Image (cartoon, rainbow, N blue to C red; front, top):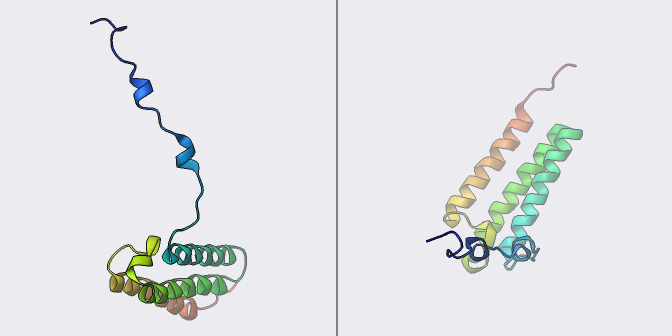
Amino acid sequence: MSGSEEPDSRSENKVDLRKATEVTKPRTLGGLVYLGVLAGALTGVVVAALGPWRVGVSVLAVSMLLGAGARLMIPEANTGMLKVRNRYVDAAILVAMGVAIIVLATTIPDQIR
């Protein structure tokens, strides 16, 4: 076979990039909560980086604790992006991280500048 007899493989592998870049709203309540937790976490990181770090990490911790509460209350069918593992495992991890961050933020002594 010569090269001209083979089908053009480039035409078979085309991907419609419009679908990949299309922005859609979350389809579940869990998706909205996930975005809220993400927004809270990013806000906390920005506040910690630019200002009073204790306030920033506390905002981050509270957003994790709110996410844990939401994960326990939202029905499984509506968890969407908020669901990673079993309901109780997700909530336990988020609570542990939130509490650990709050404990660290409150127990680390102020640094002398």
